[in-house]
Length: 259
Image (cartoon, rainbow, N blue to C red; front, side, top):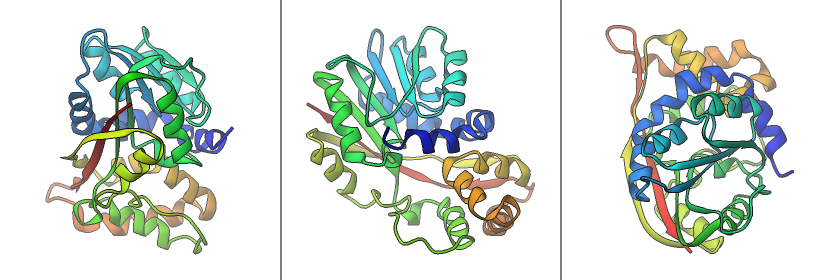
């Protein structure tokens, strides 16, 4: 099974914190992505790497018919609670449990890059998309426009060097995400960017939200929570406001494609 077992363990470790604290910060990104592929009444939508169902809930509010898949059983449980009428399953993006040509629209918000083989995952998504259906996929914008880079750097520097791994901004450069999508047989038809600030009420809330993500869970398992937290707290100190909030300005890129 591709990368689902490992990713499911990491992203499920603090699923409620992810769904309640970190996931909702992506609202501007999800709205822009859903607009880009014209999600509306009766759209048959597949949320690839749906997490706790945040984007799926927005699509359902637009009266789309929603399905979603994620590696984490804990996150899928939350998605089912949020959208009882949806079809949410635990699985692997590289081995989708759906018939060919099932969905009109696919949304993949910051998920495909966690697959062991992203091109294979995109090929599988192509298989389940109808002819002339639409996909929208997103990733981080350039590091200069993402304050989250200081968190990533702090986590990386707190761990022993690793011999491989492309990092969170591997697909951020102009044309990189487009190239990946095209390798999988999709036709790129558009792209866009959206600002998506992360704001937390205090340092404790910031840590709970950040630690809920898979990459930080992996780091915590590697060197311990105290070491990672100390590094992250130091990194974001310059981003604290006069009333103690933590605010990180971020930008995301997205690409739309069809078959």
